[in-house]
View (spheres, rainbow, N blue to C red):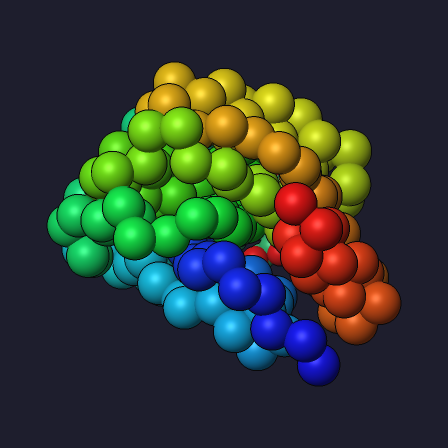
Length: 164
Ligand SMILES: Cc1cc2nc3c(=O)[nH]c(=O)nc-3n(C[C@H](O)[C@H](O)[C@H](O)COP(=O)(O)O)c2cc1C
């Protein structure tokens, strides 16, 4: 498998493992580094719906680990988030706020979700937030439960990234 010359990083949040799986697959094919972002205070399974969805809908950003994410050494960023209540998660919002050295960088934005319709809705908010941070969106993907597990879909994303 060809590895791209440019330096890429996959920055992602994953509550239940789907986005982590997608990120791992992408990074393996592309030779990208991976940065998993976690909330300082983990969401319990009891609180993730009421608290997580509330914060997602409000567009709030969680305090996260790592506290800052310096991407100045990368040519391309892949940023992936699950959808919570039709929005990007407060954890990925925290990750976007934590980016340093991202001005003008190209980003591939990915949403994983149960329903593609909901994913496309969340993507609009996600893209807006990434643009506000000075990132340049070159491509996006919405991966529903089937697409997240489909190797040919992941390989398609990799080939888009290689062809920049
Ligand atoms: C709190 C919560 C809210 C969710 N809300 C939505 C939603 O509005 N629309 C949707 O399609 N999927 C929704 N989902 C499903 C996840 O977005 C989807 O399963 C995702 O791929 C999970 O990624 P992860 O395993 O990396 O956390 C929600 C899941 C959780 C935990």
